[in-house]
Amino acid sequence: MTAPAPAQRRRWLVWGASLLLAACAQPPRTLPEGNDTWRGRLALQVDDNSAQSFSAAFELQGDPSRGALTVFNPLGNVLARLTWQPGKAVLDDGKVQRQSASLAALTRELTGSELPVMALFEWLHGRETRIAGWHADLSALDSGRIVATRLQPLPRAVLRIVLEP
Image (cartoon, rainbow, N blue to C red; front, top):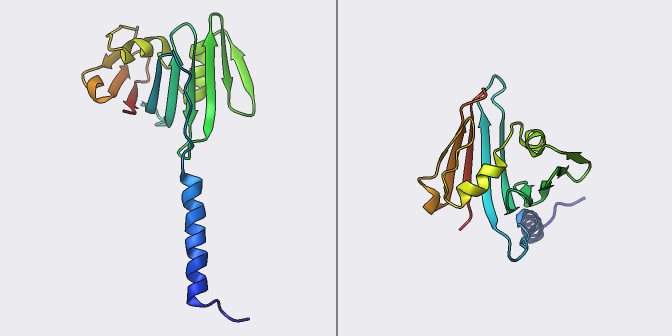
């Protein structure tokens, strides 16, 4: 068996590189009209013995009473979608759908820690809403950044949000 010619090897390399680049391309995401919608990246670092962290691209839609939080992996595929309405929250990871009356419980299941979803809407609107145990730094909101720190209950957690322009 003979080795492929250099030109044929280059064609195979170009073809393989094209496939890899196509796999990394993120499909455009369509957003419903008329809703408050934010996109970007979020990172949650919990200061405990396991040093757990969560990071993902996200879309947040709606308001504190009805909405959806969708998180994406680096390739743009949906990791999970969390939806809520009065008295009901649903976490769908594509394999299993879990329901709860507690949005906080499902955010803990999704990220490893409870997220202040209700206050997050206020913070994204630039309103310094206080929520027990959390402190939000909105000083960089004009550049699309929010840092919120949970001081109580322990362990301490830091939520960083970077919005897409």
